[in-house]
Amino acid sequence: MDDSAGSLERVLTIDAAILEAIVAHARRDHPDEACGVVAGPVGSDEPARHIPMENAARSMTFYEFDSREYLRVWREMDDLDEEAVIIYHSHTATEAYPSRTDISFAGWPQSHYLLVSTREPEVTEIRSFRIVDGTVSEEQVRVVNATVDSMAVQSYMFGQSPATVDYECRA
Amino acid sequence: MAIEVRVPTILRSYTDGQRAVEAAGDTIAELLTDLDAKFPGLRARLITDDGALHRFVNVYVNDEDVRFLGALDAKLGDGDTVTILPAVAGGAVAGGAVAGGAAALS
Image 1 (cartoon, rainbow over the protein chains, first blue to last red):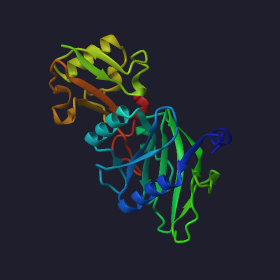
Image 2 (image 1 turned 120 degrees about the vertical axis):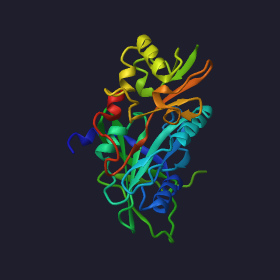
Image 3 (image 1 turned 90 degrees about the horizontal axis):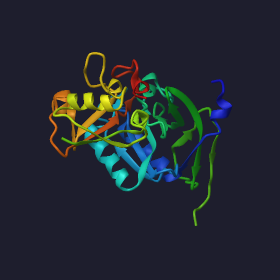
Image 4 (image 1 turned 90 degrees about the vertical axis):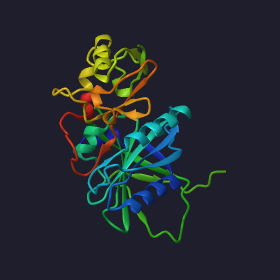
């Protein structure tokens, strides 16, 4: 991965609760791929509202938004002055990296493409990317408002890019 | 017959940045031809060389995906809204045509 230094300056900032909800969704649907969106106010780059979506393909190796649900969700976001800050899906037997298919379908250049891999039962790989004009650039994942949960058995691996986790309580 | 056509971000380079434009046609096929006359190059991003709707695009008439309405033969009425969205799909393994792809839409 050359020229990664510049691309790693880009960051996806995401609330721990939302990240956990995405992972829970991916685990629930495993071994089928899971997919969905996190909406946020237009221009804010803040993922605020998690919207798990149906994988109309119901496949272990392919996902597709149900076309009717897709229109409904997009119209709803439009009504709320939101946009798709994150478009996510899971890989259930391969790494959390965009496949050629992922790249070929990436039609929302403003969105963060979050990949989750559930190939390991104890560890979930989470990586985030921008996909613009067929070019993939990985970005940092910054998790905010995490709590130290002694009961948590799931651990996260954020791929090769450095990740920061902020253990802070929002006032 | 005025049809409002809503265009996704990646296709707005063809519509001078407009997110909604007006076009005419009794069917989707006619509408796309009219759109292409007004906004050259747009139709080629939606239709394959075989003259079919591109795998990477969803086209809706009001609330319905045109794939359930006869695709390019889907009928249009005055006041209908046509919405174009890039298909959101992917996965570990190719589940459909990968040549071209969304890059072909932009």
